[in-house]
Structures are given as structure tokens and as C-alpha cells.
Image (cartoon, each protein chain N blue to C red):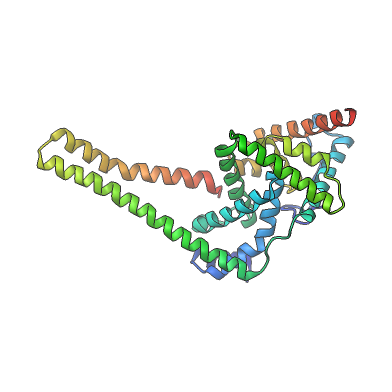
Amino acid sequence: MSKDNAKSGTPHRSGDLPEAVAGVEEEQRIRQLQSDMERMDSWLPPVPTELSWFEAQVAENGQRLRHKRRREWLFFLLAAAVLLGGLATALAEDARYLIWVQVAGLALAPVLIYTELRKREGKRDGD
Amino acid sequence: MEEHELIKAAQRGDSLSLSLLFRDHYARLVSYLRKVTMHPQLAEDLAQETMLKAMEKIGLYNGSSKFSSWLITIGTRLYIDYLRRRKREQAWQEEQQQALRRLRWQAQAHGDEWPHLLDALAQMPEGIRIPIVLKHYYGYTYEEIGRMLDIPAGTVKSRVSNGILALRKELTDDEQG
């Protein structure tokens, strides 16, 4: 039985087998597959378990996340600056068509950003 | 400290609690990723990416699934995204074959023979391999797997059934050949 089984501790329950393939042979195949997968870990190097290694990873990842957030903010600020600059130019030149394009861009940007962020979170986190 | 207390502290930004949580779940995550990727180096890279993503999204974790399942879901989706980017590359096919050869060699180095069943599993598309591992090794229900992969439970069930049938056929052909 798999020691790292997530749920009940019984990796396979015969009731879960599709009817068409239920049978002794399939059960044996599945048990064999479970046992082979369990052996796989013993062939591979062990993974780190020291707390200090994880603390270092968390510190490094924290740094990466801070850089990522800074880049995202810079991008948003740059986009906003471009739109506002365009709006200022359009206003100065009294170009009505351009003014409306810039206003629409400024109004739509937060909606698009919010939708995209929600979509990403919903897709990737599963919780 | 209990796991839910660690999670709460990690959500408040306590890095020691986060480190303790990762330490408790990392081995299991890598072990899972090794089984679905059949590529130990990629599994470790994905586990690292999973930690990064989990740090980024820890505030959104609401406890409706186990923390370990949440990490497995993130790792699985990162793997699927990775394959989407690289699958069509010739270099990726070669890299995957090399990883499999190394795995065979590592089994032999431990005095074991690389099992045909794992070979057959490795040849399957990830859309079938992942549900088989989650169902028959980790014991998740079809509904849970469906939520993890963002597909209906019925689709998971048919993929697992077809996968087991294909595994059986592959092995029967292998034994006859």
C-alpha cells in the first residue's frame, strides 16, 4: 500500500473500476502499477528535508515575487502614463476622436486587467 | 503547531510557517510530480515553481481541500501549462526519452528491472496518465480529479477506464510480442 496515499489509505478500491474492465486481471494490473510507482521513489535521490533549505527557498521566492510585483506595477504605470499622455495631447489639439479613444482606453483598462486576473486565479488555483 | 494554524500564520506573511508547511509537503509533491512527468529533473523544477505559485496565492487558499491537494493541483496545472508550451518541440520528445532512459538506468543501478507497466504509463498522453495516477495511486475521487483538472467527472472516469484498457492492451501485446 502506498505510504503517501492522499485519501483513505487504500489506493485502489475494486468498486471504482469501470464495469467493462472490472475483473481479477485488471485489479492485479492496478496493484502492480501501484507497487511499481511506489518503487520509483526508491530509485531516485531523496528530496531535501532540512528546514533551513525551505527557509532559503521561501526567502528566494519572496524576492522573486517582490520583483514580479514591481514589474507588474511598472507596466501598469507605464500603460496609464501612455494613455494619459495621449489624452493630454488630444485635449491640447482638440482632437475629439482621439479624446474619446483615450477615455475609452482608460475606462476599459481596469476592467480588462480585473477580468484577466480573476480568470488566471480561477484557472490555476483550483481552490 | 497544527497545519491549519501554520496556514493561517503563512497567510499573515509568516515565512517560518510557510517553510514548515513546504517541508511537510515537499516530498509528497515531488514524488507525485515524478510519477506524472516520468522526468525527475522536471519534477523538481515544477515543485519549485509550485512553491513559488503557492506563496503568491496562499491568501486565496480557503481550506475547502487539503493543503496537499491544493499543492498537487497547482503542480498539475503548471505541468499541463509546461507541456502546452513545449510538446510540439522535437527537443522535448528527445529530452523525455532521455529522462526515461535515465530512470531505467537508475532502476538497474538499484538492482531492479524497469517495469513494463511504467513504460506503458509513460507512453500515455498526460490527459490520461495524470487521472490514472491521481485515481489509482493517490485515491482521489473522479469528482476531485475533475475539479483539479477543470474537467467534468464523467470525462475523468472515461479517461481512467480507457487508460486502464490501453494499459492492459499494451501489456498483452508486449507479452505476445
